[in-house]
Amino acid sequence: MTGMKDSTVPSPVDWRETLEGHATMLDIPGLQEELKIVMLENKVNVKGE
Image (cartoon, rainbow, N blue to C red):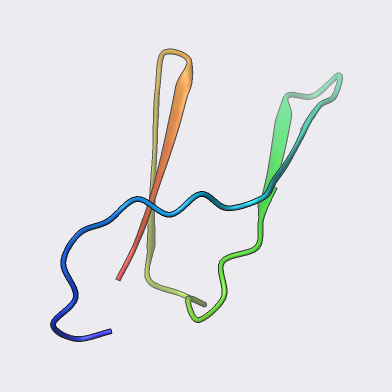
């Protein structure tokens, strides 16, 4: 993905609340390891490189 500009791409999200906390599963094709996940208030931001 070299040379690509920043963009927002909607991805399907499976979110569940359990007794222990919250679990989120995302299907992000082409990205396996280089993910940055930031949680702030009521938003989750996932950035891949």
